[in-house]
Image 1: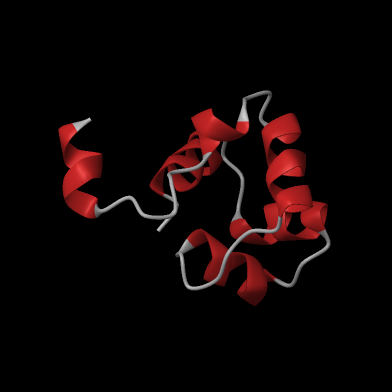
Image 2: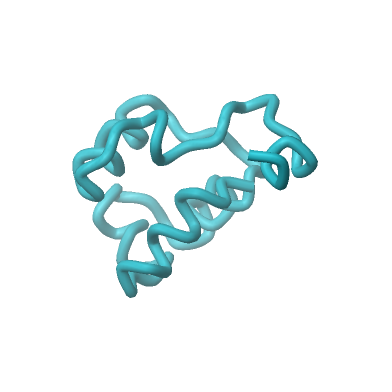
Length: 73
């Protein structure tokens, strides 16, 4: 699950539908990516980083990150 992205999206008051539309995705496809069921493509990550004025590293968790590691940091 992309908890950083989820938190930032909610903090900014945006819905999954709004962000999906900005990326040219269906809401279901975006939801699947945000929940970690499928991977974001690089162009989608760059678009989101630009949209939120952040770096990709600040917006996304590493692919191999575990929930335990997320709680520690």
